[in-house]
Length: 362
Image (cartoon, rainbow, N blue to C red; front, side, top):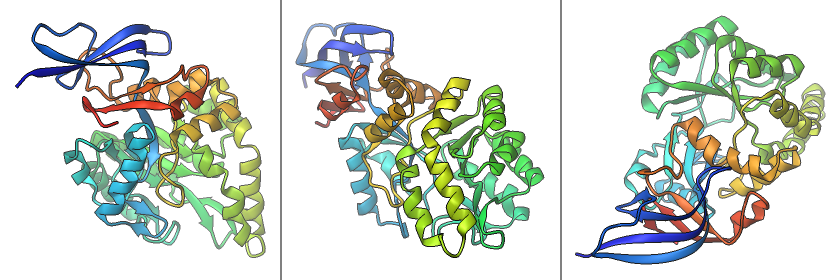
């Protein structure tokens, strides 16, 4: 059988600063050296970037809970066809390990199943437990996932009528230490202000949404290197989420609207302070899959340049997750575009070719 190679010419964005004129895909891997004789070469051209990263995505989940494998396949395929080739699945009740055996579907980094306080999260999504069970459940999910554990840090408390932390700080500290002992990092769903101080004190690695960041917690996050995944296209739904509670829980309603109205300023302040920010869509609950570019554009609305928003969903997020980009010898997971996305993120909607695990899937 004749060996084959893909030769891509044009502008190869190895990083935001390093640009090359060509790259080869040989035996499924990135090479910056031409293959030897006797190789059948296919050539394409364009602007090359690593496959996009959605660092908050729920494959195997919809608004009602776990979905059948065929629906999870549709979700993952939609992400792939819109350029997302690496997903950090931020909690799913479905067993999606079978996706690892599919070369045509995005690579998946699982965080196990959400861990929530009893009756303090969306029904059917999470392991619902009490604080005395948190450490053991965190250890179990750390072993079930791919190096991440997902906690629900706050939710509406119907007794107080507003967002409230779910876990005592001392238990949270012990649980996060347990995850780290198991070799896993911890992230958490947090909307409000108070829970962020608890998670920072407990040593978390990341926070999802992080709408409650304020001057003091921003300073703490920056000092500790705690990353955030803002999911701005999800935060855009806060008015819709809060509206049904307007009469019964007016404090919660006002709080959610305030968090929504200052969302862009919050992200801008986080970036200004040096907090790492990454792209995540929160697809799979009520949001559609395949919207990583929408989230990048939302980050631009919050003050990031297109180049920085692109990095938050490509080079920077891959490095944060411990996955390669367009380095020599890496798996070839890349997109070939019509134009330079550092100048205009709309170029990411003009995908000429998708290469996943070294195979051209489009």
